[in-house]
Image 1 (cartoon, rainbow, N blue to C red):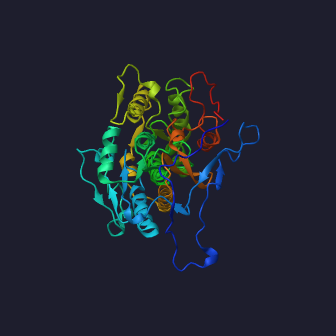
Image 2 (cartoon, one colour):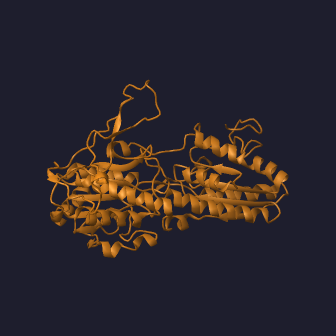
Image 3 (spheres, rainbow, N blue to C red):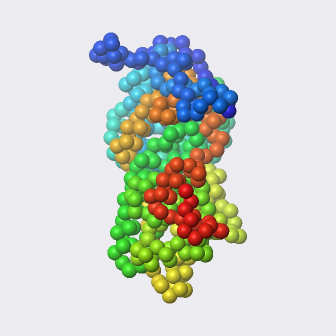
Length: 437
């Protein structure tokens, strides 16, 4: 199994790096990375691989950079939806550019890729003073937007501004745009920083904002549990984000340990029958008198038939509302059998997206930002900074844009969810009470 991990170079690095830490003891002075500093792509895989030594470049400062930082114009853009930690990344980029390298012209592109078109708002300059406290707030001081823009138009706009380094913070669709931009911009470093609260970007251990999302969602699940058990035949339903990947649902359920059923896009489930969701809920309510269901927004789409497909401005498929469907079907079913339930439906989606980052995400955002700056200054392009197997590395965007990361239904994460909740298989034809382990 061989993959191409070579990172393209936009410009040759021939200028000595100004990166110094004043007052450092010589024995602890900065260690520059070289092209020989690598991290194995498959650290836990044995020699059966065709190329077991496939490696990623290790992130970090290089001894040589592309140009005099005093002459550079750098830009930052945030695209897609909101996510905890966006402001932390912006702050980390600006602080590193100014204090590590001496770059004093950093442009903030307004409202995503739309800001790189003539119709967009003019960018504004970012300085340590005006980003110093932005990490305290959720959202993005630059604003976000969805939707593709003409790559040639964006490239020309960047030339007008004299931009030589562009930092693109966004998900898989955003990184596809970054890859296209890098392909038409000579001498310009385009560096991606992985952002998606769904945690569905390939070749990264975890995306920033995910810890915050799980923490908030877990608290809501606990609230739903309190509501459900405080009333006769109470059912709490919590819908969390996760269009195509159910990582938030799975991990928030584990963080709360209050969920009895977790529904994710990767694992279809049956609604009817003794082996389906409704049959399991009947058994659960007879035994415990309450139940909590955690559902990812993209789960259960197999239960919607004959509806016209819709897509958002970025081309992502818009899923039907599984939360409302669950409420309707559960309420209807238990009314029909003469055992009505009391439903509590909670959807913390916007509360999660707009929250400021938690402590672990804040640390992660800053380290990703600094790694991105070092890569750009060394002339790398068409790549994304990533934390892989605990190490910060450079991943070519060609690899990042090949798909989406999803839960493996046969993997350890999903097995842990099933063991923690005790839920059976909820599939057509499953034997009654059968576990999906």
